[in-house]
Length: 270
Image (cartoon, rainbow, N blue to C red):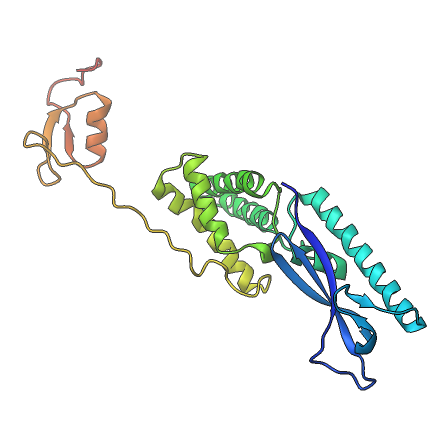
């Protein structure tokens, strides 16, 4: 689907400069998103054409203003096209920041996630962290990467572009595309929430974006023991059985293994 994109200029009429001119502002619109910026130009309201967004007449002042506005528009169009080719996903804020020379990609989700996993791996090697937790982080990293490609058609996303809908969409993606169970999804969204908390603490984002997002674990219905099955309070004694199921019950504390006196344990499954 083709993106809608426009650039317009207007006067900031509520602010009148000492020379009687008004500052010229620019507005970028991309697919319903909007961003405004100062053109660092001013114009006499008497020669400003509001409908066309430019100075009217052939005076030197009008020609100079229009020449600068044309340069600004051409530059913005160029940045828009570059972002579209590179990322395939454009917002008005991204175009504005690129035009103004701001490094909007300085901190991205996948870059800080990769850094987190790298540091965590070192702690696992040093025996400070659990390996299974590290494996879970790696799994979530892969799911987030797949989600960005599927939903946004990008390989990474700037932290400042993440909204509350990001986690809601990620949750749906895990359930519908990856067929992940609800309680596992609840586990998988936590690393993303943790990373954005860290981003706020480090000043990479102005505020935590997931304050309105909530997900709760579902209660798993547990089966009941029949009258013929041992309970935790009733530990059944067996004579050194070999089946794996009994061994598991022994580890769970439901069976007690005893070696019979004067007999060797059977070598074959009972």
